[in-house]
Image 1 (cartoon, rainbow, N blue to C red):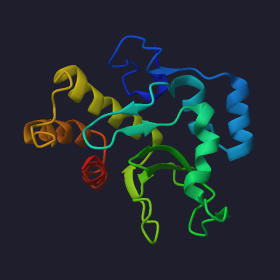
Image 2: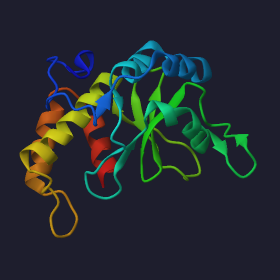
Image 3: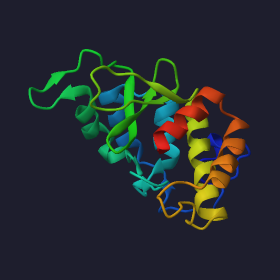
Image 4: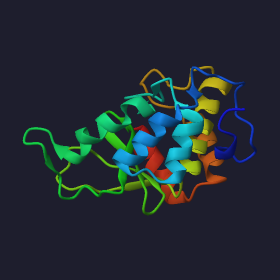
Length: 192
C-alpha cells in the first residue's frame, strides 16, 4: 500500500500508483536530513511516499509538489534574495518548502509540525495554516483529489474557471471532518 502511515484508515484512495508517489532511496533521504535538517516526520514522508507526479491542478495555478531530488535546490528560491544571495532575515531555519502554488510556498514548519502557505513577494511573511500536521495536509490533498478527479472526473471547474459551489460544499464537509475551520478557510484562499 502507498503511504499507509499517512492515511487514517491505512487505505489509499487509489490502487498502488507508482507514478503518483513512491519510496525514495535511503541515501537521498540521508542527504536531505543532513543538508536541511529534516525531522523524522518529513523524512518519513519522503522515504515512504514522496510525490512523483509534480503537480495537482485544482483550478488556477496548480499545486506543484516537490520531489525529494529537487527539494534541496528549491529551498534557496524562497529563503534567500536571489539577486544578492543573502538569506531573508524573516525566513525561519525550521521552514521547509514542500510545494508551491503559483510560487506561493507551502511550508512544513519542523518546529510546530504544521503545514502553512504564504503569499510570496509580500513585504512580510505571513503564514496561513493549512493543517496542524503533515498527515492532515496529505489527507487534505487526498480528499481534494478524490472529489475533483475520482468523483467529478476532472470536471469540477465551471465556465468562469471557478470550482462549483456544490463541489466546494462537498470539499468543506469532508475537510471539516479532520481539519480546524481556520485551516479550511486558508485552503479556500490558497485554491482561489
